Structure formats: structure tokens, C-alpha cells
Image (tube, rainbow, N blue to C red):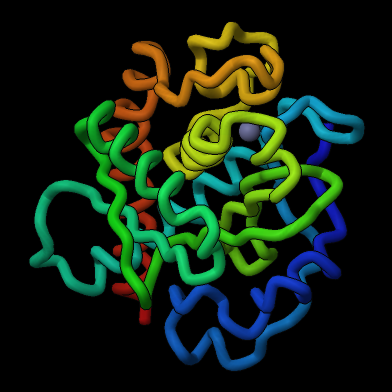
Length: 227
Ligand SMILES: [Zn+2]
């Protein structure tokens, strides 16, 4: 179990505190603070990491909230839910991220991924971390994906990227699953190169973005009307 995690050094090193990923209104972004705790879900069932529903939920909610608030601010936008990401801080992984986006956009219908240089709902980061790659929140409710260099050499890099992106779309880890399951992550070992979600995972994401997103949108609209 890994529900809370002192992400201070990592977040500071990534420069997350100042940027806030550009997703929140200026009024709340004015005073960045080091995050006290953050949700964290990794690629591998390594020491100290584990399948953690609470962490995954926190991460998913962060992304959904960002999307919902943006849509609430401009209600004329299209019906299809688009989640925007930034690759500015993961330049070495642009091709894997692009491939992961193609895979997901070809696999699910109720949510789309698209790149955007500013005002993204989540961001990809790259670097070295002994914990490997993971999806996390920065303590301000902003989601991001960290891609670890070493792990992306050991494992199929597109699988790692598509797996972490699966967390953005709301899927939890399931390390005991087979290689055909994307969210089994590093569980089946480095020889597993499958980067596609299976049919159950596709259905789950479609369901989440019909039901889960509507609830988040209602919350965001409620909040907007109280201002
Ligand atoms: Zn994972």
C-alpha cells in the first residue's frame, strides 16, 4: 500500500510547484507550495509500491476535475470529452506518448487524448527515479505522469507509457494480470511488450467517462455557480 508519499523532493526537482501545469485559475495558482502528500501509482509491483485504489482514484479525480472545470467555463464546447496533455517536460518520450495516444484513441470512444502546449489537464515528465515510472498528483489536485529512463529501457517503453496513461483514464493497477492486460504493468516481466488495453479495460474506461465524468462535471458546475 502506498497511499501517501512525501513527494517534496521529486516535485521540486520537476519544477511542478511553480507551474501547476497551467491548469488552474490565476487566483489559486498565485501561492505555490510544496505538496505535503500525493497519490502515486507505479508501473511495477516493486518494494513499497502496490496496487492502490485510493491513490489511483485521487489521480483520476484530479484529471477529471481539470477537464470538468474547463468545460464548465466554456459550456459551448463539443460533447466529446477531450483530455489535454503536455509533453514539454518529456521530450525524449514524444514518440511513445504519441503512440500511446493513438492506441487509446483507437481503443475507446467516450474520451479522447490530445496534446496542447498550454492549459493541459495533465503533463508527462521524464527523469530518473528509483521508484520507476508512475502516475501521481502534485498535492494541488493536478495529475502528472513520470517516465523513468531506466525502466523505459528495461521494459517496452510504449507499454510503460500506455499503462501510465491508463491511470489518467481511470484504470487501477492489476499487477497479477496477464500480458494481454495493459494494467498488469511490470507484473508479467520485461518480455511483455503489449501496449494495448484488453476489451475489459476498454469497456471500463468508456464507462468511467460516461458516468464518472458526468458526476465530476456536476460538481464543477456547482462550484462555478457559487462564485
Ligand atoms: Zn500503474
